[in-house]
Amino acid sequence: MLLQPWAPWSPLSPSLPARRREVASQSAWQQVPRGAGAVLVGAAAAIRPRRSNTQRQARRHGVRLSNIKPEIRDIGDPVRAFYYSQCPPEDYQKPEIAFFGQSNVGKSSLLNFLCNRKKLSTISKKPGHTKLIHHFLCEHSFYLVDMPGIGFAEGRGKELKQMDKIVTAYVRHRQTLVELFYLVDGSHHLQLFDLQGIKWLADAGVSLSVILTKMDTPRRSLPGHPDDLAEELLDGLYNMTESPWKLGHLKEMPLVFKASAKARTGREAILEHIADIRKRVILGERNKKKAQKDLEKRLVPPAIR
Ligand SMILES: Nc1nc2c(ncn2[C@@H]2O[C@H](COP(=O)(O)OP(=O)(O)OP(=O)(O)O)[C@@H](O)[C@H]2O)c(=O)[nH]1
Ligand SMILES: [Mg+2]
Image 1 (tube, rainbow, N blue to C red):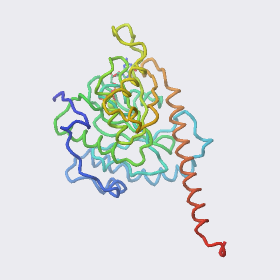
Image 2: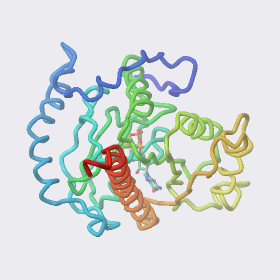
Image 3: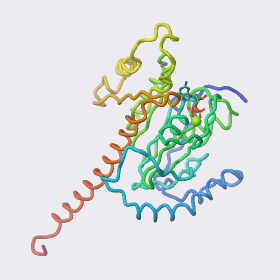
Image 4: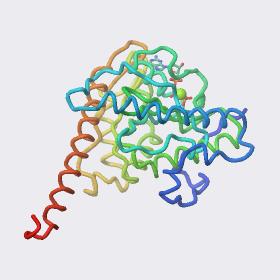
């Protein structure tokens, strides 16, 4: 086992062949590579019976704006993916909200905390614990996605290379990814690595917010740490080289939330934000359908109307 540094935006990252869009829409079980191993076959096989069942449940539950509450009660079994093709098929009715950031920053702990479950996603002190992408179907209508960490991770070179590939593929190609939470360790000094990571995602066109984790750690233990890490982070993002915000490519700076899974703080604000995103997705879909209908009406010749 090696502790190796890696980042999807580093020049050492294995370059990813351009994927065609239709690959993502193929069924995951059709794409399990030969000899992928029992775990992978099992994970992919688990997707098949769930799909029709979930569709039926989603139809029965019918997602309406008034049904969307800042609470997560119903959570399905996770779909685990070691290869990108094993992620659940993209479904525009089920937007995805992902948790991303350095290994050990507290992604899995935060997901458990938000869902109010202790063992939904396993946690560990060792960096690089989560090696697969985990899709959790919540309320039959949206996914929370626990990602492998970036940065330093324990693992074999081959494993890390695959983690790099799947993270890059997911971030670059996932059409149903509506929001990505980039987690920053609030108990440490701000790192250039995180600023680069956020910039990399923003440049890739990912809609993102930041969560400062482990906010229970007393600030006094970090001499010289500024009072407000959130402000330091936003200043850092704005002032970094080729900042898309400073250049005017992006208008709004990311929202910054503060949370602690240990002290159980910051949950409500994040859940409210998730509910808002889900509402915006539904409204966006409605507007799209309405615009399509209006267009169709306009295209019909007046005599027929
Ligand atoms: N003090 C404190 N520790 C936390 C908090 N959240 C997580 N931790 C600890 O941080 C360590 C890593 O937590 P994980 O949730 O496994 O982190 P991760 O980002 O999922 O890590 P990888 O899966 O390795 O990428 C564990 O020892 C947790 O107990 C928090 O809010 N406060
Ligand atoms: Mg994890």
